[in-house]
Length: 204
Image (cartoon, rainbow, N blue to C red; front, side):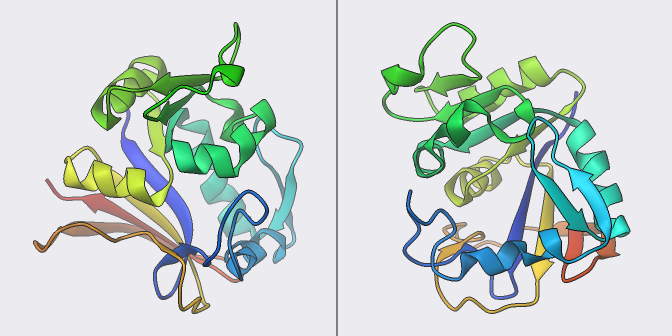
């Protein structure tokens, strides 16, 4: 069985989006700076399942290629789903996507839809995603989903694309985790162009 992992671009002060994020501005005020490294290199990388092509460093391209080929399913939250407008029906990397929600948006329920809406909680969503992913990894996105996974002991690996910028405000990734320490083991550090890729194992 694969890992449950998260991978997000983050500012040095811990934000994955700027303030005032919403459908008109998915990354919030200044949040686009978190993805400047996607055009900061000389190596072409095509995002699987999309038509998007980025120019990144060869180190970043190799890391993303390895991570994306290992991904078998994606779990996210309703707020992220709504802000992205369901990615226009093409979820990240083209893998089955499980959305944790209190109510099902019926306009997205149809035969062949890439989305499964889970109304009985995060653990159920992760369990369903693992069943679909098989030996591949389950990626979890959105700050609240990552935080819930950490608190529930479901997260195996944290990958952060650390960007040298201070946003000052916005959506903080590691928030609402309680008061106790959470032990991590650093397993990889890769320097890219305009980004440092950090990978840690969650010690359980």
